[in-house]
Length: 404
Length: 68
Ligand code: HEM
Ligand code: SF4
Image (tube, rainbow over all chains, first blue to last red):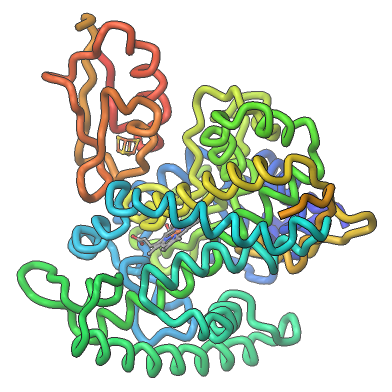
């Protein structure tokens, strides 16, 4: 299916959730911006607005008093709003004041060396084989190991954590069976609350240097966080920390495995890796969209939005908008001088993990291209991207074997 | 110092960190990852003008301004 066919300008509707769209979203985004800049979600007559132009997305990200994140209405199995994702300013700032320094650039700088070592160990495991499933052997274990070390959670439980976040982000039920999906999310949510309740007890008794200890013992406005607040942070962390870097690595390496000239630029000029990370984030925008709810009546591009309406900010569409990025917006351009992408969102909810994610991505691209400068997609490989957050189920690569 | 100055709208800065990644001689991060202008009065050192322009242009929040 042509991904652009998932935009229906006559009905002013679109469906970004199709796997074909996740696999190749750029034609979908292009048509959305041009023909249907504010679209309803297909199957919902009204009250769901998909916003796709850069300027409109930017406005919505920066105006939480109109486009609120108070999304308890969006049921992902949680009992209460996730912190800080579903809290609006001014409340929101007090949590970020506490949490930002734990993941700020200076706090995580020491990880450069450890992540480099980890990246090399993972590459060692497949370098001599001449082939790998990059998703299973690198994209998943690399960020997840870093994340579990940071949070002090046991590596042996990684399988459970991955199952939890998948149950919530991409529940494995019959497509369209919304009830079964919600049921699975609820059950998973309850399991997560129970598990993290135990972790909190442990950190109260045995405080360490890990992130959860810091949440448990940290203060906002002169008081410690309640047990519920800490649970609401942990819930979000499992979702935000275990999925997104994986998806970014999948999308980036799949692209570079199929664009040899682009990969060669990075191999030949490693100092361009920083720019490459930004450009890969922009072009692939692995978190395709973020959600908001309309707080006060607002009109955008002639469409009236009412309080309570759901809004989907199509970050990927904004990030490939020619109005902002110029005629080469859909290309990978390492010489782009201005790159104000929203792959990490924008406004007050700008991704809390963005400094960590950038470090992990930079180190991974540096080490991978230093060790394995030539790789390609295995012949006949079919890539399955998941909608929403664009992970690739299997990413089979071949390359010249190297002795370890 | 050149005749160029940079100013920060601290209300608008949310800590994307593009500025201090692109021009570390002019900007740094506070503990929250928000922008801090390192130079006295925001004056841009001679020779850093291009980097200053680039950093300001890349702030996704429009929080930085240059005055010539
Ligand atoms: C390349 C990897 C990543 C991408 C593309 C990404 C993307 C995003 C986006 C788009 C948002 C904004 C959500 C919104 O506005 O509603 C966000 C928020 C958030 N992200 Fe990330 N993220 C990444 C990595 C991480 C990591 C590694 C962590 C944790 C260690 C993390 C934790 C969070 C948290 C806690 C928030 C909520 C911030 C708030 O609401 O104030 N993210 N992320
Ligand atoms: S790029 Fe802009 S938003 Fe980001 S830290 Fe610098 S001034 Fe703040």
